[in-house]
Image (tube, rainbow, N blue to C red):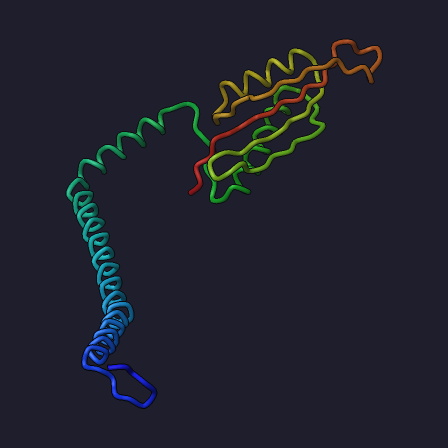
Length: 187
């Protein structure tokens, strides 16, 4: 049967249209209804698995509380007995200020004249600085000894020594520039 305009569709054509509409309807239900449900279910299961893993980890830590407390106490005693400690501060800016004071005091104690002290945080765990001083070789030795054996850990990264030609008649006066780095524990 030829299908002309206004003529009825054959049974085969009707079945094809019904099947096509059924497939479109099924695909729409899957894409709009079933897939979002499955994705939200999977996300919920993933969150639940993560919470259960974290709970198990915390329960294991709680079970080890006496051992962890004992280890912390031992570590604190060893740290308290150590002659050198890292800087402790509430913020990186306060740690920088502490390092600046430490460098100023060490220079003054060594009899060196401070020209410049620049200190700045370098991340959360380190403070860096530059110290420029004028003095003699004995003052430089005293400064380096203080930084090496002082109460705080300070690493010297750069050291530049030049004879200060601006002061004629004083051949033993040196211009010294130090680049330092100090580890910090933020509280």
